[in-house]
Amino acid sequence: MAICLAPFLLPPNPRSSPPPPDPYLRSSPVLKKWRTGASSAAPGVDLKPLETAIAKKDSVAVKENLDQLNQIGWAKKWSSQPYVSRRMTSLRELTTLGIKNAENLAIPSVRNDAAFLFTVVGTTSLLAVIAGQLPGDWGFFVPYLIGSISLIVLAVGSISPGLLQAAINGFSSFFPDYQERIARHEAAHFLVAYLIGLPILGYSLDIGKEHVNLVDERLQKLIYSGQLDDKELDRLAAVSMAGLAAEGLKYDKVIGQSADLFTLQRFINRSKPQISKEQQQNLTRWAVLFAGSLLKNNAVEHQALMAAMSRKAGVLECIEAIENAA
Image 1 (cartoon, rainbow, N blue to C red):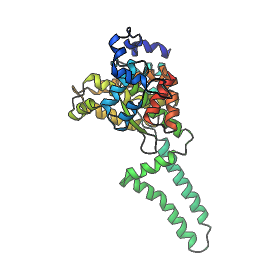
Image 2 (image 1 turned 45 degrees about the vertical axis):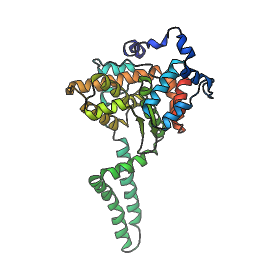
Image 3 (image 1 turned 180 degrees about the vertical axis):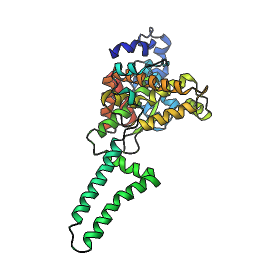
Image 4 (image 1 turned 90 degrees about the horizontal axis):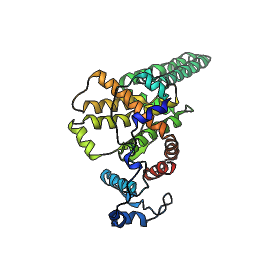
């Protein structure tokens, strides 16, 4: 039943049925340049200009190159879903789509925190009991010192939460699903941005540095000036909630939503006109629904991108993974 949402959420791309080739385009020196090169992923297509633009972190050039690649029929997925329009969305629709525990999506998970603290307290308690068997005064002082470790951890968390969070992030990597979660989450941001038409210039899956680097000069100016309109806010909201949607479609509990919700709130605060609390809640639900629909309708591309990002492929290789899977 989730697929039935696609026609409403994902209008057909007018470029999916392109008009007959323009004679000018056939003779255009710009497009000739794209045809004369060679790429292992796309014979007859030169991806070097795109690679150079990505290396230079030039978002304008990246968009121009991808637009030209799209015109000659290679980057078919690039900006293939440019129509983003918010509507009223209910929790029931999220559940119908396949989002698990939709009502708890915005509640930060304490799984990693609880596991870390339980491990610290449990380990120190066990060591303290064992150390209590030491002879003489050692049997008193050593358990006391070991037992104080838990108090020190709590004190660090109160004084410098960032240090404790770094330790928790490192501890989280021991969970069997950690790497898969991170790859799924960040690949969702990457893919949805690519489908909407926002250039990606970098990403990271490193512990504590997980992110996808989206750069669009025009959007940056709107954000800095606090002039984001509804259209651009909707696009950014969909990308922001993509990671949360990807986790929600796969797991019973979402782990990495806090940073995404914070990012979305920052975009909302920089938009005009300001929207009410109820509208913010609806925007979040709609963005999860829209991003989740995109991911379900591009599941093969998402899996291919996850595999590429997991082996730390470059941005161009990730784009090739998306296009080759299409």
